[in-house]
Image (cartoon, rainbow, N blue to C red; front, side, top):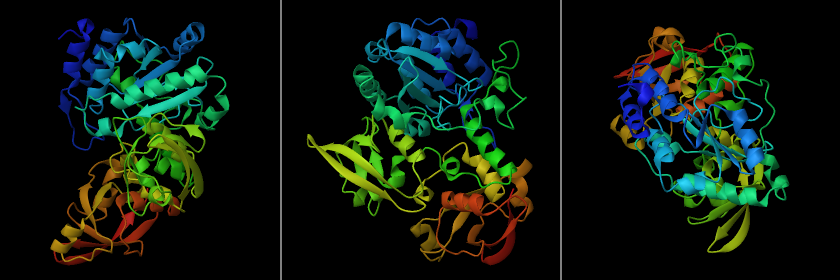
Length: 446
């Protein structure tokens, strides 16, 4: 297939060919190089999409008076393929997209981190701006991230509509948007972060191996965590648990809506605040909410203990509540599916991938339901991911005691604890069950 002559449907077919390499961090398309080149061939001259031209996009937004939509897409990643294809091809979305200046960005090499702060672990993200640089909203879907064949764009449509409402109200609503703006950052560009500096250029190497020249978005979080670790500092908790999903505070939002509550988890901050299924979130911490990613951004920028004011609609009536977040609420985040967690597994777990045994699995193994029982799903074999295996840990072992604790906790909780409390070079006492044997080992920190 000639990538230089790909149409959008042909490109979509090429992208939906998966492959997974042992030890890889994410499922990718079969021909990564062909996918990237095909994406450019199909879209570089597209009438709607400006290709990797962010500055040009801002210029056009200023001149046209339209809001700016910037889609960031990791082309080789299989995740979100279905949604990406729908956004590119859907005739239903076209009238809405026509009201935006649209930019497609496929690499993070030259991103201005003072402006582009979002969930770097998603392979499809969108940010919406006024032409003057004011950020209106973010969009990102973990539903699509988990299912590459998911094509529904109802939530994205509602985000587009919500941004257009914000745009029409601008600049009278600028104060309400203040909390959505990016926070301080120690590096202005990914290419300034140690670990990436000197390895990549600002532009992709279209004349050579283009995929290897690309800074993927998840590399930003990886590099920031590694930099803190190498400096002998605790990894900031907002980078261990970045952009927390709403479930972290007990909110399950409907994927086909902007921010409608589908369910409230029991014994959660959301339940204590009195939120109910069917409530439509309007603002959180004073910020207008037009997507799930807007909720995650508020949580990302929230302190470890906080009270967040919330407004919502219930049966057409506006109501207010207060979300009280307890100490260490971030530790409830489930980071097990994040690409960025693989690097943290090397730092904190010596390359182990762990899962908390269910109550039924514990009963089958005659283990208590309230104590530690983390099954080793995977023990890395290469580089710093092999440290735990070299220390004697094996796939199939069940960790029943770690660092003196036998309390039940998830892998996500343990990664946070270990990165906060321990430094590279330490080794922690651990006890594992291997068949009927209990074995004492030492888990290396890196």
